[in-house]
Image (cartoon, rainbow, N blue to C red; front, side, top):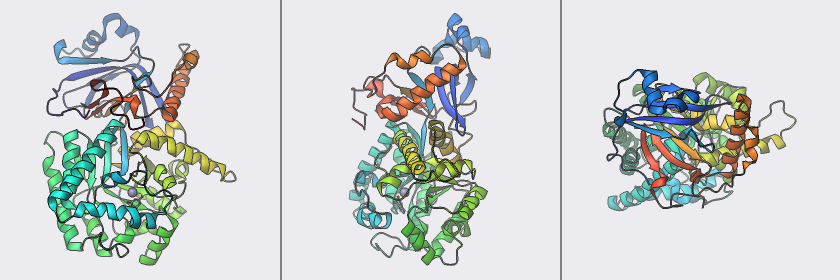
Length: 500
Ligand SMILES: O=c1[nH]c(=O)c2nc[nH]c2[nH]1
Ligand SMILES: [Zn+2]
């Protein structure tokens, strides 16, 4: 299912059909009869919208040659044409900006257990098993867990993920290797935590952490081929309660010196916030703990961030940091309903999505999209008296799943939407895939009367059907950096589905 990367030939590819994306917040663009050319390096170097009759007359290849005046041999160009398929469209790959790869074995475990208890009961014991003294055993365990999570996220259309691994350097390096091998764009974070008094079996001392960070970061920098950097290190203080001031200081300086992105947790649970207040009485609030240690940057991802006050929102906005909204986890371990619409539209904060495996119980951003909409509806039901309507639209959530994520990881000019110069990180969505769980009726076709408005209405309905009744079975092909990494037409039906 995960295609062998090395065996693939690089070539020029023309993709022709319907493209759906959200280059700006809340605005869905449906590009019908659009032709996109992707070069050897996986970069979009040609894009022409609304070319129906012209292409019908002379064919995709001749049209491309005529438009570009390029003298290319047609045998070196591959054409993927879905223009006659009403139920298929290209969508930018999903970006999962918060996922704990190491917690994958705990999916579905720990329902309703609040954060601090959940960490001690389920999470720290699991992550500790990646730090066994027996190197062979821990590597075998990590190989099994990490290869599965990378594969599953790709199957779900995640072309880029920002991973938390564990405190262990050996297995964190392995995670980076596996992402690269599978062709997934990834940010890999060695978890940093040197002050875990509630579960002392799972922590490291300051010096070990510094040494491990050096090892992991230089390993990741060395494994990418020169021509394409797919996997990058990310500075990962787990969260303030388990980090000493000295460690936070070091990580802030490291992020500055090496220009590295940062990821951490913020304001997920009310008891956690109380704890931070006691541990860092000198800091104005939880958000300013990170700011005081130079960890709030425009490439900082703050997971959860549910219970923020006005000052904290303004600070995050000022610093240009991103909030990774994790609605599945927020419900599962009952942390709260995040007022994401307010963050997006009142404070102009960039918001992305995170599955937060294993607080979240599925490694799927499509599932996260669903949960984000439903959580916002719940918030609406019991905050009707407030002036701000908290309900998210499908367009808001697709934005968070793609462009918001790209901005969060600092790749807003590289991925997240379709544009010349961007990379081809894309998923093909087929509502009528061979093992689709969606029953399609012609009922929606009545909207198509040839006008632009009717196309918007038709595809808005189609997207709603996909979001609420579809799953990973409708994501049939996935490309990262121009390379096809998933092709479900090449294996037995149902093999890849996680929702069967
Ligand atoms: O959802 C969460 N998962 C974690 O692993 C974690 N660690 C600190 N805070 C956390 N929140
Ligand atoms: Zn988390």
